[in-house]
Length: 92
Image 1 (cartoon, rainbow, N blue to C red):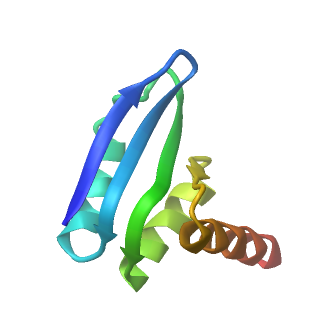
Image 2 (image 1 turned 90 degrees about the horizontal axis):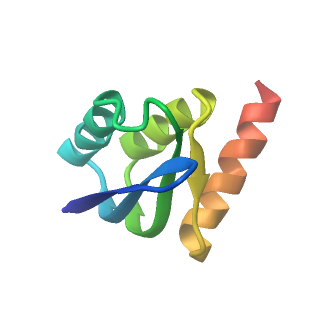
């Protein structure tokens, strides 16, 4: 199960994810991004409360990262994933 909360802020739109980013929830995240609620602001995906990320979720996050979406987290698990993605992206 994944909960996605959209928070419109002054300079960005924040998608706050809570739960597991796997299976059908990866498509749900993609649809949220495509809806364009953030069209006039930058997009931030907050992974602080994500408890599990399946390989397909990691691939979706990498696609978003490469499209310029900011990924944020204060949790150890997701913070280390973001750091790893940044290192991988610099190797390509």
